[in-house]
Structure formats: C-alpha cells, structure tokens
Image (cartoon, rainbow, N blue to C red; front, side):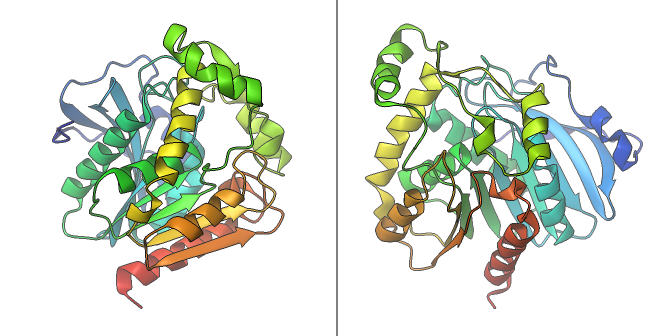
Length: 325
C-alpha cells in the first residue's frame, strides 16, 4: 500500500492524566480516507504527551495512539500489539519508553481495539504488516532524521518478523516479545480445521485463549477479562490460519532477518513456546542478536510482576543501539 497520508488535525486543551480517556476516539468513529487525523494531545505523565488519531490503512480505518517526550525525541518506536487485544494495554510501556526520550506510536490492528473490521479478524498478516509500515512512515514524518525501531508482542512479533523478512526494512533494530514461531495453543484437530474454515466461514471461532496463561499477576488477568476492547470469544478461523501460515513462512526465511534483534521470552510461556526464541537464535541472519529468557515468566512479560526489569532491559538495548555505546 502507499503509506503517505498527510497529517491533519488540531490540538485541544491539555488534560491531566485522569482525563486521558477523553482523548481516545470512540469505537464507532469513522476512518478518515487517505488521511492521518491527530487528535487530543493530553499530558499522561510528567514530560510525556499523549496523542491519538486514525489513518486509512489496508483493510479499513486504523486507530492509533502515541506517547511523546516533551523534549526532541531520540528515536521513533512503533509498538505492535498481539492477537485479540489492543494498544491501550501498553500505556505503561509507552510511558516508560517515552520517559526515556523515545517517541512511541502504537496502532490497533484491523478487527482489534478501536480500529474497524470484524472482531479479532486480522484479515491478513501481510495487510497488518502494511499498516505497521504505514504507522512507521507517519511517525517518521513527525520525527525525521532519527533512528527507527519496531517492538512487537506475540502476534505483533510475528507481524514484525514478517515485515522484516519479506523485503529489506529501514530500521535500526527490532524487539520481539514472546514471538510465536512454535505455538502451543490449540490441538491438532483445531489446527487442521482452521484452513478449511477460513475459506468457508472466516469469522467462525475456532480457538479460545486462556487468560490464566498471560500473566502470574491476578490483577492483570482480571483487567484483561473485563476489558471491553479485549476480544474474549474464540479466535476467528481467518486469524488462526493467518498466524499458523505466517509462522511457517517466517521460519523458512529467518536468514533474511539481518537487522539488530532483541528477543525476549518467559520460560513458562504456555501460549508461544520458548523454543520459538531458540529457532530465531539458530536461524536468523543477523550478526547483532540478543536473546533474554526470563525464568518462570508467563506470556505477557511486559505485564508480569518483573515488568520493571524487562522494560529496563528493553531501554538498555535501545540506548545501546541509539548511541552506539
């Protein structure tokens, strides 16, 4: 797709952190064709501005949000969320990275969060990768001439891997949290039926995610189960098939992964097997690859009790690749 939407929009009076929900577009707000709409800057934490907007992406209208440092950004980051969730679950990640001087942008995939589309139906991983590329272009136009990074979690990691291996990509590095190249979820029958069902009934639910596997923190699980923007039904056949097909595709071209890579995985991840990180270590063509395994952590390492340590490792790696030290 052509990812050249012109930035438009206006600023509104700033609000306190408690008022940030008013800055988020409503779930039924229409996409703006061929334009990026920047809405409602607010203060979400000291020295951090929050902005939301929309752009016309592959598939339909894409909602996004950003956490921006008050001082000139040192690098641009596009944060790519996982399946059945949304960018709003990464507020603490965006704030931590923006507090370190990075401009952080996060989109909601098609069928997810505040973006348009059938619930939890990704459409295609290829289209999702196009939208990540478009988000990166938008962020780059707002902050030109500085390093660019992608951070993906779970299915978001798979989308980042797909984008980084289908053609050369101009980024300083990528961070992969719980990459699902070896997927534990689902049984053999569900895996066999998904490709058939995606042709006949792409929105039919085929796989239920168990929230007890996402984090050891009961508050995280409770928030996840009660979040109206988290899809708690069975994953649609189309999404399940796209994920399974893309894992095969990416594993076959890991040698094309040549940019600097940081891979993070909890050793107790029951949704995306930790052996996925082994596959990346063994097959990637990058000469700058760091893998960190966190003993006993579950799938959402950014939402585990040890999240400060995990995010600190991410910031340290980014700092090294921004400064070269």
